[in-house]
Image (tube, rainbow, N blue to C red; front, side):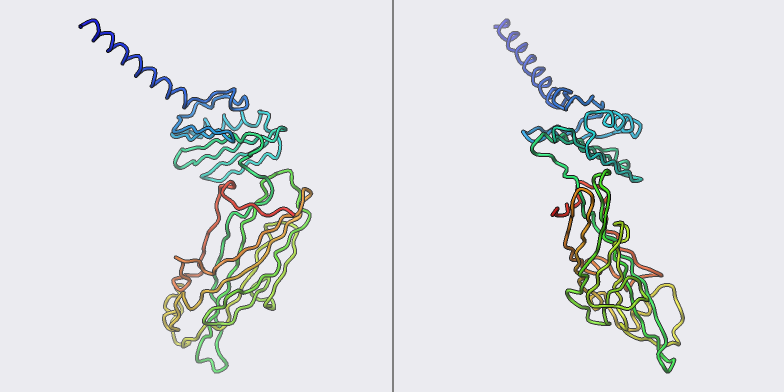
Length: 309
C-alpha cells in the first residue's frame, strides 16, 4: 500500500510539473513562429495565437530594452511601409515584409507595458495609408463695444484641427483639402460661419486646399452670442461674463461636418467627419484666456483608416 501511495505521489508531481512546463512553454517567444525575430526578453503577461496573428502582452519593460528591440526590428526582414511614431510617453513601430506579413509594436513609457503583434500573411493587423487619429479644438473669446458704448457684444471662435497621420513614411503628399465644411445643426445663440481665420470673411460652406495635412484646420466663428455691461471689470476668467449673459454650454453647442481628401503618390484617401463643438464633458463657459479640447490619440493602430479610392 505504501508503495502504491509513493507511486501515485510521484505521478502527481510529474503531472504538476508537466502542467507548469506546458503553461510556461505556451507563453514563450518561439523565434521560428515569430518570423525569425529574436526574443526581446520582456516579461510576458499573455500570449495568444490564431491562424491570423500571434500577440504578446508584456509588463515591467524598461526603455533601454525597448530601444534594443527596436534596433532588432529595424534590422529584420520587415522593411516595407515602415512607420515609427515616437511620443514622450508612447512608442509605436509597424512594418511589412515582402510576403505581406506585418509587425506592430507599441510601448507605454509611463506604465512600462508593451504589445507586439505578428500579423500572418492574408490578415495583416496594420493597414498602411492615412488614418484619422482624433482632433483638437481651441476656443477663443472676443468682444466689442456696441454703438452706444454701454455694452460689450461677446463672440467666440473655434479652431478645429483634425488629427490626420500618414502611416507609411514613404508616401509623398501631392495635394490635400478639407472641403464642404458646413454646420449640420446650429447653436441657440449667435451666428455661425466658417473661415480660414477668425478675421476672414465667413461662409456657410467652406473648402480649403493645402500641400500638407498639418494645414487642414479651419475656424468656426460664433458671432454675437450675448452682451454684458461695459462697467463689468475685465477678467481673464470669462465665466463671470457668461453668467452675466445667462449663457450655458448647451446654448453654444453645434455640430460641424466636413470631408478631408488627401492624395499621395500611392493613391487618394478620403474620410467624412462629424464633430460636436464642444463634445460632452467640456464647457467653454468655464474658460480662461482660451479653452482646449484634445481628442487626439498617439496609437496609430487605434486610428480610423481613411477610404482609399
